[in-house]
Image (cartoon, rainbow, N blue to C red; front, side, top):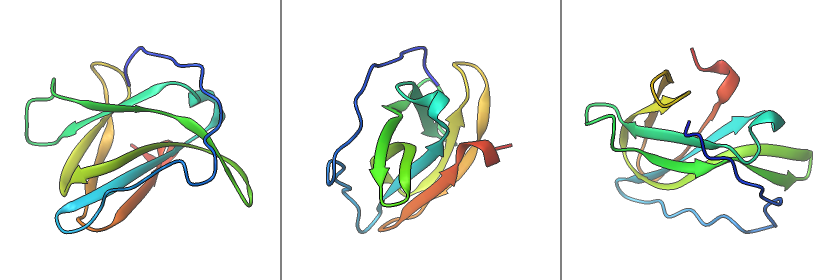
Length: 109
C-alpha cells in the first residue's frame, strides 16, 4: 500500500472495464470502508519488488449494498505480492488468464 490517499466518490454502474482474455486476468481485492481512497500496491512475485502497480480502493454500489474494492483490470497471469505498506508484504495471490480473481483483504496472512 502506498502512502497516497484519494478523496473519491463512489463508482457508478458499469464504471469498471476489465480487459481479460488469453494470458490476461483481473484482480479484485475486497476491503473494509477504512481503506476507501487508499492505494493498494502489487508486484510480480519473482521480479524486482520496487516495480509495482497500484490502484485506489473505491466504494462500489451493488445490489446488496456497498463493497469497497481495489480493481486491477488487466494483469498478466502469474503470482503477485500484495503490499500492506511500502516495506511489508500482506500476502500473495495467483492471477489466472481470462479470469477475475477475487480475494478479501482481511483473509491475507
